[in-house]
Amino acid sequence: MKWSLLELKKYQETPLMFEETLDLKSQLIKRDGQIIDLSPVKVKGLMSVDKQGYLLHYQVETTMTLPSTRSLTPVAIPFDFSVDEQFMTPEQFQHRDETIVEEEVLIIEGQTISLDESVADNLLLAIPLQVLTEEEKQGSAMPSGNDWAVLSEEDFANQKEAQAQQVDPRLAKLSELFNESDDDNA
Image 1 (cartoon, rainbow, N blue to C red):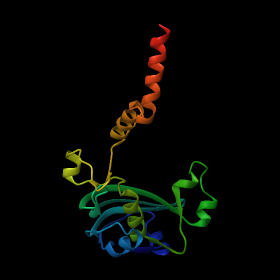
Image 2: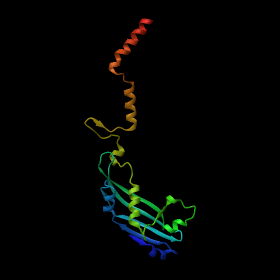
Image 3: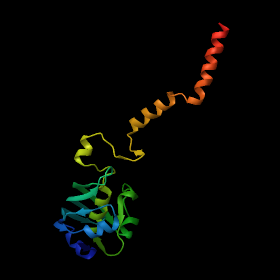
């Protein structure tokens, strides 16, 4: 869904209300190969227009299927979040108020504002770094295989400490020499 800037000028007095269901599955899978599936995205919000720019506020609801970061098992993750974005034309940006921070403004390239692009970008930003199945969240078992295993940071630290305390068998005989020389001096 796109709005032309000329069309949006009609909504300077009252905000443009919208409620859409977007099919962004193929677009998001192209942009991020880890996405397995995406249900239709329900978007409800408003666009407010004034002399200083265009304020887009909307609520997103959908379910995205991603691989578990531990076992690659598909996990359905529900998304329900709100977004506020401020758009400005290059001319509006040049004459902006000094209280508006540059990083908080999206410059409009062309003559349209695309809801689809905004929703897709914000869905990609909302993907969590760690995706776990319910069993993986409940249990502490980590994946392992032949000659390898995934360790938690705590297990790794404990293992490293145990290795540091263990005496190298090649040096064990040397430590016996020191013990004998201490006994001889006594």
